Length: 243
Image (cartoon, rainbow, N blue to C red; front, side, top):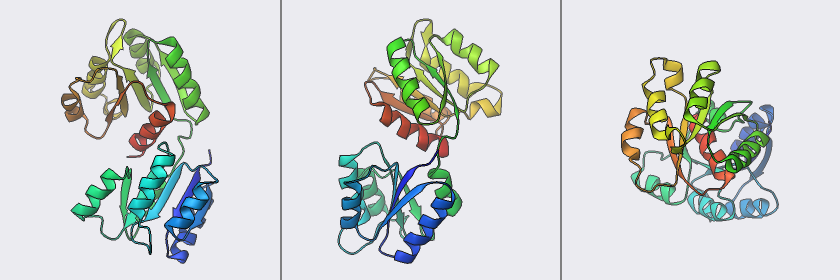
């Protein structure tokens, strides 16, 4: 599955080298050498990923990401910088909806892991609302995931035993129990491979004790509050699955 990627850096040679690397991985890549040029390109083309340098003449990378995110919150925004440990930069990046900060020189393996398609990842969707399950599964399958839908905890447990998925999406309120309890089971199972399954827990409850769940698997659980757009879920899954 090819992805649309925009690379923004005033160092033309670096931008071209990164573009060549990602083209070799099968992706479609555009380059820009300033924030202003990137905005013009992004006005004509939607991107799955934007990789931008922080320090550039004129508009910096944080400002660029802020402006692009307002247009397209579903894209994933990666910031390159030689100052990755700067606390002020980290705070600015958080406000600008930066999804990951990559230090220079770039860790190429990390970059390729972040900019990658699902490539047929098996996904277990546990949702009793049939209409919502249909919408989400169709959207996820269109983006390369292989989705198995379970409408109850019992069906989910059977699916986990038959074919352990690569990722799971679990609703909190299910007809035969608490989806959060199922997530706890996943975190506590003796099978180390199963315990590492990334999980998105969907909820309409604002007072869910997310801290207790996150302590069980801090790098493997994310939370989404209903309602949300399918594109937002896809974005969370990409980041969660690429670690």
